[in-house]
Image 1 (cartoon, rainbow, N blue to C red):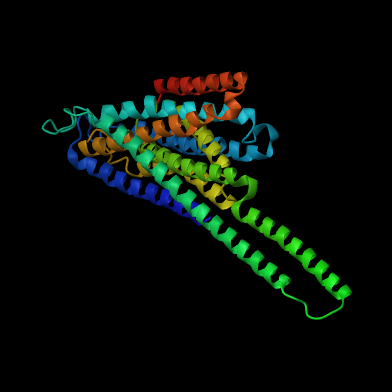
Image 2: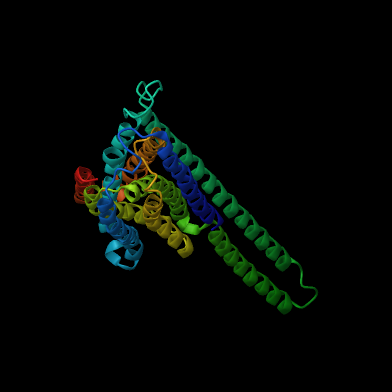
Length: 389
């Protein structure tokens, strides 16, 4: 589907542009005389030597865990218990939504507040006088709402316009066929007239049946609601991936640029679980969106590679990177705050609210209790990881 491929290309372009924005900011940090840091020059050579294998381990660990988490719901389509309409899938998606919600509130937003209220920022600027982190989160949430509604409306209009066009073409074809069959067949006896009548009636009936089938196929038949549901989830999956990408690039660069083994060790474990749980939530949306195989592979690879590529970028600029420079703090703080707003909106509105209000959940008390517990478990476990990451 062209719209799906275009959206995936937009996500890719957004990730590339984000990397291009962050790398110059990190490189310029060395010229800014960072606050409380010497631009990486103070790190002992032994620390750098011990940090390198940890970064390599982080690269592969995060890559594998992200791929595992994202692929589980996709591959689970072949397992009856993990189908998108099964109870287990509801529980898994609620757990992943709780993880994404905690990621926005507990991991990203506090970092944004810390960056944008740092004492290393210029004293004469507005950073100490206005809560830019909260403002950025609000802008991210409102922007997501606008993109969500506009994109859903656009895809829905395009879908029904093409379906209506196909239905009109099918109806016109049926009308022409009936008109041709209704024309007189010339002279002939009563037997010929009777045969002609039977011939016309039979083919007209066949034409009606054929035309009805064409109309049903054109508009999607009884699956029209399913198509609209899939379109909705395509928008959700693409916007959710965009929010995750913004955050993932930042964490990857920060980890790759770090020279402190005691900081990297807990991050490797915490971020591996973090990527796996986020991948489960994204994978669940991808499954419900019913993308084609090529789009699924592209989105999964894009999610899996974003943080590892960020680690490589951070590793490459580690000698000139200063995370306490004003430029790095402002860029990272603003991007983190916007990413937090996106993830909180997606978790509450597009994931949790939709699942909790599903008629299947509303009509079954045990399933409703189960997804509440699952959501709280995901949010609780992800909140615990904040102790290390």
